[in-house]
Structures are given as structure tokens and as C-alpha cells.
Length: 155
Image (tube, rainbow, N blue to C red; front, side):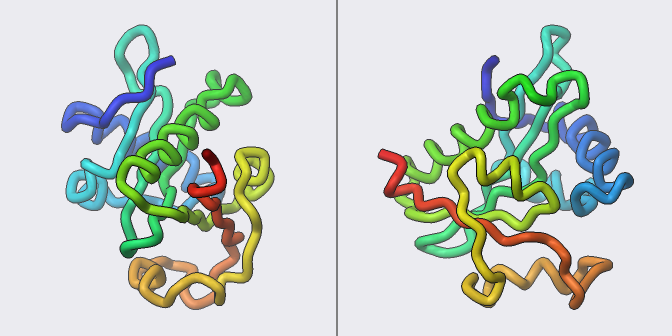
């Protein structure tokens, strides 16, 4: 399985994939425009036919912090290490960029804990990360779980 940078041709497939899970309440929806505007943040894994089988975004929040978001894996590829491969790629990219810590807000904390993330109180995260939250339909009653990963400890 090969993790690659997403391309313009992947955007509509990523949008459909993420919003399929969002429709089930398993993640927050992403606007097509948001994916286009942040395309450089995205990584994908494609199936043999070249279609997006999984995606994730690593978004830089500050000098010492990046966010893992929009992690989605097609149903047929779940529980096969695809999501874990994307998380490993995010950790490696964080290391390469010199970002010591990554975080996520998720409805699936068990998966992230298996990848080495630790649960934290949302209040422990800097206020800057909440800028995106103002447009969320669940704001201010966020029910996602906050987790962090110490990239420097991953060596």
C-alpha cells in the first residue's frame, strides 16, 4: 500500500468519502472548497484501479503543532492497516517538518490510541485550533475526543 500526496483529480473522491462517514455521524463534513483550498495537506492511498481508498490531512496549526483530520478509509479496506499507514505517514511528515506534536479531534478515539495517541482535555490544546470550530454545526457543544501524539517520542 502506497501513501501519496493527493492531487486535484482526487478531490471529489475524497469529498465523497469523507462526507459518506460524516453523513453517518462518524466525522465532521468537509466542504469541497475546503478540500481544494487545503489540498497540499492531504495524503491518499489508492486502490488498484487508481481510485481513492483512503485519505487524511495533516494541517499545520502552529510552529509546534499540527492536526490530523479527515481520516477516512473505504469500508472494504478497514481493519487492514490502511488507516494506520496514513497515521504513520503523518508522523513522518511531522518529523520532516520539525513539528514535535500532532493532535486530532475524533469520534473514534480507540483507533488513535492504538496508533500511540493519548487522550487529553480539549482545554489543553491552544485556542488557535478552535478557529475552524466556529463554522461547525456542533459548536459550541463539541462532542469529539481530543488526543495528542508526541512525534519526538516516536524516534
